[in-house]
Image (tube, rainbow, N blue to C red; front, top):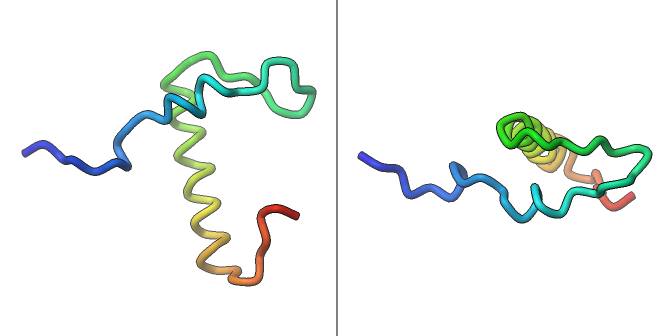
Length: 59
């Protein structure tokens, strides 16, 4: 059975829009490494949203 979940799709737009010459953000050229880091960051964002309801990610 094939899952149609959008959670299994590679974030192409985020991968292609990485900052190239940013001093604080490291460019990740390896797609599998990018996918791994993206999933970790996504879990962190979800955790922050769920566990810290007053947390504003824009600050």
